[in-house]
Length: 424
Image 1 (tube, rainbow, N blue to C red):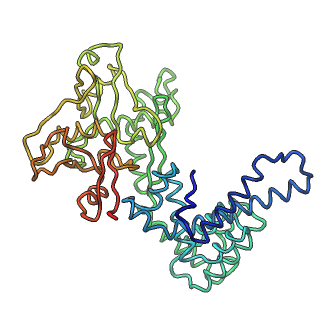
Image 2: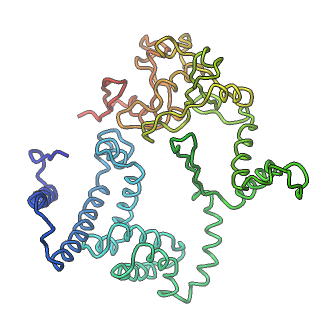
Image 3: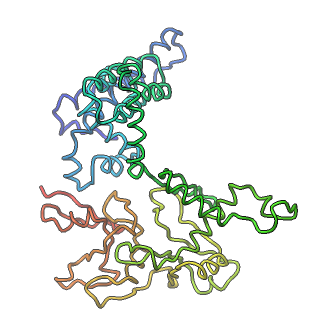
């Protein structure tokens, strides 16, 4: 990563530059010849140095909102992901922690900056403090924070997580029982806010599903799945093959059946188009038994670092009988055909083609999936622009607004990438 010494004058930049210079001096030194005491001291000091550097990075992160605005990024985390190749989820977590330390947890911030707590410990302590009920008084919160910071000296993050859950028993035992009862009520009330669902392709033809949903919704899902898993025949019949299949596998098969029996016409629309699945293959491939098709799903390959999933021609034919499948017919060079150009607004068929071609928002560094993007005219329709694929580009709502904002300027880079920056 290059330095910007010629343009920086702030003491923070000079301090960082001096620190990097000092580390470079030790880069080629051989640690093998350190004594045991020197190795122990070096490891302790380096751990403290990492914490102090992390604290400074988080302080700068909390104050860098104007940098994100200047570069048309959603936030500092998005800037770090696009400019520093950082993991977006990790950067978002660091951004939340930065603002939390800056605004609400000075003792944790001081411990991190002084090397008395590491970054993982700081995360756990902040999570424990943020989980305290809203009605807990501020003095009690401060006492809990100070106690957890002191515990960082002799407890790991996992141990701190357990201690954080019971911190009220130590700092305010008179309210701990009532807090426990209210916590249950708060958990039920916030179940929807804490719900999540992730789908990650493993690259071997399967996708790993991980989620957290309210207990009531989970009970409904289990009831639906059990309806599909009920084996035919008598439960005691040893010839009943369904009983020999592990129950977890039967649940997975039932989940697939539940999805395939869902009526797509009753699902909500996305970006002006009914929910669809797009399969790219030629007519010859569809007819052949020894051929593959490409499934264009929601996650973008750029985010996951994996190619788009494939399925056999037979599976594509089977899905065409049970699900809403849109075949994308490709030309000799696999180009997407133009599907319409008469109207001012892009038609559903054109949106499908744009989704197939662009895959995600084309703004520099943005990976918002195509199904969440708007179809934008490269040349405004009111100025003679044409509603066709060549003049269309997918932009997420955030960048679509920036493109139409006169305070921002747009530069189209090679590869259909749009650079959006605030005007100087």
